[in-house]
Length: 161
Image (cartoon, rainbow, N blue to C red; front, top):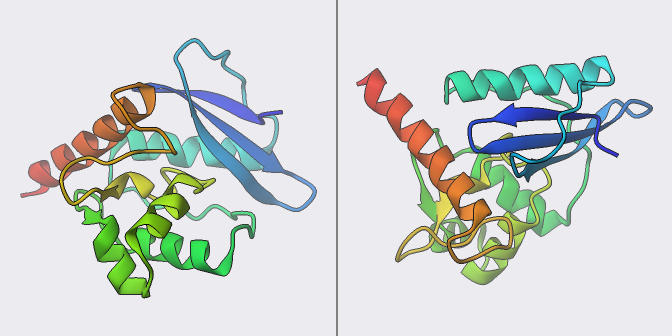
């Protein structure tokens, strides 16, 4: 069960926290039709507040306690994604070279990211275009979310210049 479902410019964002362990377990993109849910705990409220701040200003930082999940390789990919500044992108190949991996495995790790926005997998693109997002290709909901996030960050960067 989700601990909060908040409005987002592209639909909704669902958040699941584990209050017993004090960590965020999942952040997921949801369609606008998803039922909103007020945060059920202080940690869920903190996650909602930080994501809402990101929607206001793309260079907002996060300090949420995230569940310790993923393989060692996935964690290396996620750490490398966190080093990509708002308004910038890297290709799957760029990240693969940086962490001594292969582009397809980097793409899989991006798709497996349980904390999108906080761990900015949307900043990783294909060498010849947008690439997939959240294990989805084509021109559906998830790619619209990726386009919105990238445009939001690019607009913020342009305003800063």
